[in-house]
Image 1 (tube, rainbow, N blue to C red):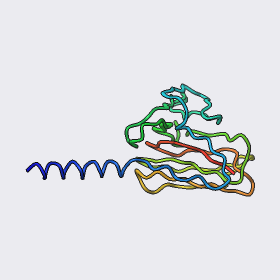
Image 2: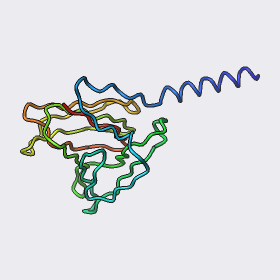
Image 3: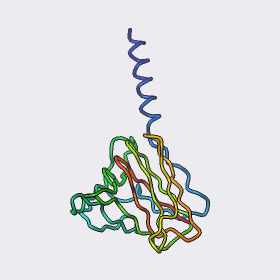
Image 4: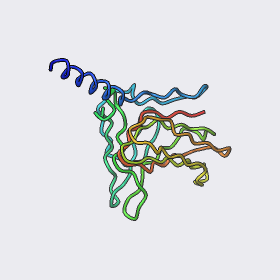
Length: 170
């Protein structure tokens, strides 16, 4: 009977450990803003905030900025902080989270994990949509790539229950 209980513990421990977020490797030559190296917790009431040297515009609900939380969420089991994007959707009474990049690189990678849905939209300096990437798999950390010869000046987050770890560009 003890062996059975021990086996169950090992199986549960291994299953939980396997769910821990494994950071993807940044692309060669990319510059990254790694949010997991920053002090936490922090709260950003909006409408704008800076995290890791990058400027964000908070999502809104009924015209009011949504407070953004920079905390360690227990869902990823890593003990380090991430920007919690609870709800960031374009709609009649809502606007999503936006990221303004310091310049318009041709390649951007967004490191995230979601528990509902996550799409990132690359927008060029003229505000035209030039690239879209969706992470189809829940509970898997991944880099979502955006690229455009015209450059990507802004990233729009169409996401629900998403953890944002890092932004890289080249």
